[in-house]
Image 1 (cartoon, rainbow, N blue to C red):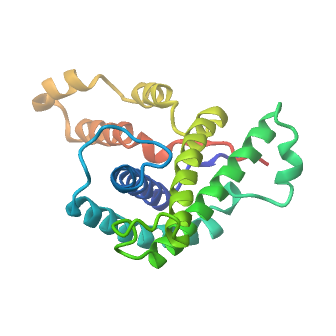
Image 2: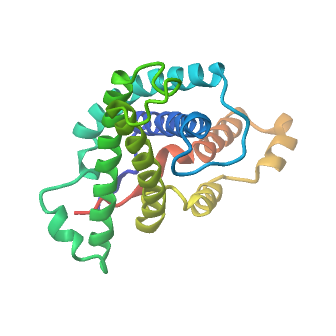
Amino acid sequence: MARQPYQTLIFRCLHASQGLLAAAGMITGYWIYNTWDQRFSHIPFPRATEAIVELHEEIGGLFVSLCILFIGYSLFAGRRRLVQAKSLQQLGKISHPIGWYSLHRFVNTGLLVMGLLIIVSGDALSDDVLEQGALTDLAYTLHLVAWAGMVLLTVAHVGLSLKVGDMPFSVCGEYAGAYQRLPQPLAPALFHLGTSSLEQISTQVLSLAEFLSFGCHLEIVNLR
């Protein structure tokens, strides 16, 4: 059976960038919440300064730009990772791999929904809503719910990615396979570089490049 790429390069770049921005938004967002809200949880931590609030807003701006691109990509090239017509029916088969894949698709879709809710509520959020103590403001409440949902779904996303093998955690095996394709150990090749022919050197360099870029060729068999 033909094997298809695990993820395209553009998807990995968008996914990694979006994940880092989401993590930064969660941290700065909770810091702001921990300073002015504290209704549901509180940790003894220095108060968030105006610089932290501005940083959260800047992260939000970048998050919006990348999230729109990521959602657009996911709805087209990555749509197989989202909820399908039979996903609800397949969710009942949780004891089988298809059930876990379906649950993963629901989580992935939920993350996109939370991302949209974060964008919409953040855009409607007044700059001084927390300073005024308007903790029941609709936009702020939706923003808080969206970030809480993002945190929970991110944890579920990582856990399910490990469960269904949708993350490249077979790194050691891929390294081993790539290393076995090296025509000779790297160190001796470099040591004898002066006596090697140009063809041998070229072969070694190409093999090393394949070894170092193995992450770009991680593959899984797509679920049919």
